[in-house]
Length: 415
Image 1: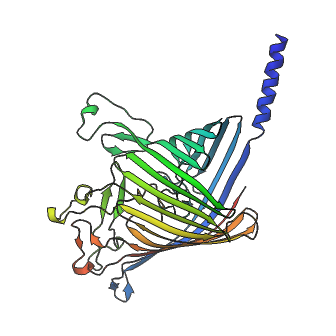
Image 2 (image 1 turned 120 degrees about the horizontal axis):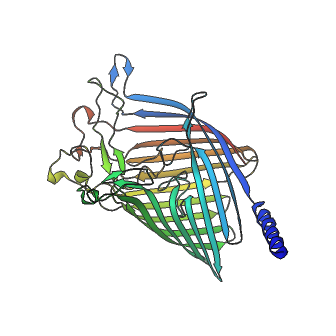
Image 3 (image 1 turned 180 degrees about the vertical axis):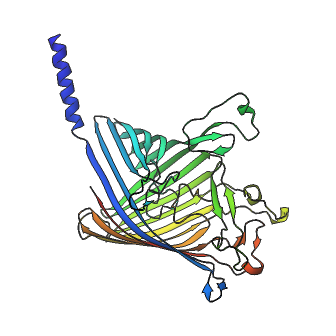
């Protein structure tokens, strides 16, 4: 009995020693941003230009988390500010003492095992997705997106494979939802709108990480993603939607459905001499005829039906990184996103589908873990046709070409 007690105490002490390896991390930031849109029609009410609109806003963000582990096991939890119902935006607008939502950002555990020259890990729970992507341009996935489910990673020397099976929420007879549960009856299974089930995304991504020299390293990856997800949509052809009435022309807008996407991803990232890095990514979705996917009534003829633009790509070059005091970084990227290429819910919330243009980023570390940043986008609509009939804009909107400019100043600390 005494031996059992001694063993129990020793086990408890060992567990506490392992728990002492727990590490805390967190950050806090403040951002001021400005968005300007111009339909370039020069419409006026009297002497005032009604073709332009400017929005100014300030936001805050914060997160805190802990991670730890012991032999073959790791875990992590975290919470952050989060806009309700938005999957990829943890900056929240504030107004003095108004309460704002806090959400679980992370809640995961991981099993790791070394099979000789093969390294394996399996992560379960709410997590950053396991796939490699262009984290600078955030062309495919936004850095803030978190998924619930399973992620597996295999690494054999310079070769590797990433696998993910993530649950996106419930689907009740063709209606997309964010709930983690659903009810099913015999009658609901016979619904003409489809079965009640969980939406999901399955993905696999083989890659090779090739080191050419001490300062030159490249990653090449190919991924395929199968989405079983009804109800995802992209806003397209929105035009100058803020102008209403009969004085200012307003182009027709529509909602493009992205049911059950099938996406291919081609990615390369390079670490180069002189603190340079390069990122390139191409995403190709399956073919989607416009007339069957626009939720608003399609007024075109059968001869006018076309497929939604299914490709998105980005190229970017970055100098430096913010690691310690007085570090400096600057980056440039150009991207183009077709109407049906990516899902707005999971991509960059500022650079969404049906847009193309430039992004410039600048950062400076005043002190260790205290950074200032400037981020700017110069975008315009990619497809200027009327999405309801696939024809060129006519009449008062014939010359409309929407321009979109966004910039932000931010400051933040982390530990």
